[in-house]
Image: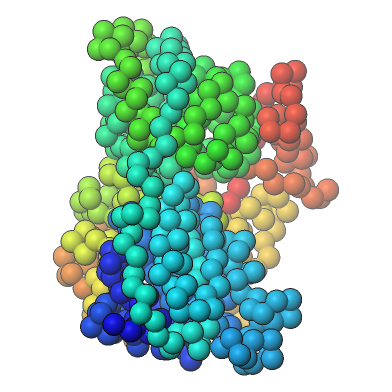
Length: 620
């Protein structure tokens, strides 16, 4: 049976478990989209209003389920609009396939409409190469079956990531008799396992450590390592701290969870990790955010702590800190091997020896909760983000999913919104893209239609992608959008004020009028899109009940909560450190803190004789 290239791709996607394709049609891809509706695939097409958001939807689908799906866009601007989405997925190691149109092969290099051809023809694969694991330029129909299974191989082996496939207009409509290759025989069987001697060394370190700590990153969640992680740390009595994308790897009401680490971190998380004598890292890249810009003694002290680093990507081992034991392996299998090598008696003795250590960590957690209470119990309107998140947590089931926007909502959620299950906290970690949370919420709900999904997002972030509210109405996707409105990019404003003593372009104000804060009428905006459920909270006591009604409506809903701009209470507590080179006009305290922090950054010099000081403050 001869199939067009579009039909063949649709058949392959269906066979590889893809439930739908998302994207935006244009002349560069309409032949493919038409083929997806053919009986050989019958793939639903989820239309978006901006191509970046199609990629974010596909990204979130993978984060929630572990199943890659595809996005499909046109040529030129339709393709280049996807770059932020690809970069977000690439930095956070999430798998998806982007299919873009391209000028017909017999038209290449002639400068046809929307073609990029000044360096090469086509040029878009060169743009995509920096933000994908592989990019394929398909110029013959008989290449398609091979490229499809190679794309899946690239996406899912080793460290996951996005893959791009470029299809010229003429190739899309050509036919071939070559059929789809079965995926089962084209992917490697099993995951990389640790060397037995390395596991023996790890076990010895974990059993003899006085102050061990586990730091989990997104790799632990990708590996579905939560059961093994939880069992190991409970048996041995080892506190766990987590990074942005590691949040959810262990339930935050588990006594072994010490909280988040880095910047912004938590007091128990940073203190526990910074004072550990043995640190077990699972799928953590030690970015500057997760490591307080490598300032010794703030989040980590490696050395003097001995690092056991487990990562599926060999390039990460020893990259930012020296590893006592470096293991290239799947986190789940490495933990299973550790558990298999530790007897119940060994575990009992190790845990018993750590009673006072664990009591100290528990005391730090109690102190931290007291410190947060001022923000969590705030009674005014505009209110605080912590008070809003407290009310959300009361009404959102444990399996509920939150997607989180950049800035203060992202930091506050990481620091103070407890998450209990893996794949229920979806955020743009390393790339921290604004405009991610709203389409990610759509992708999460499409992936898990029976789970409640709440998008926690600031007003500035929300307005970068607000057009996708239309999709929620058109397809009846019941996401609750919790808009935390402080009229601006206030995390940036706080940083500007800290470093420069003034803000520029980060507040939304009536610049041609009285200077008062400016805000969109978000309720009216939502209703203009067709939302029947939309409300602005007028009293703090209304927050929880209003969110509950929105969740119970099983309809697209928007809740606006006015948030104070008062830096002393508005968002997260200032914990950790982030390297911001300072202007000569900065205050003496800021300059002194930066000098001390820079001198203590472990990635660039020896810090053995450097005087370690507490950070004065942090920003953003």
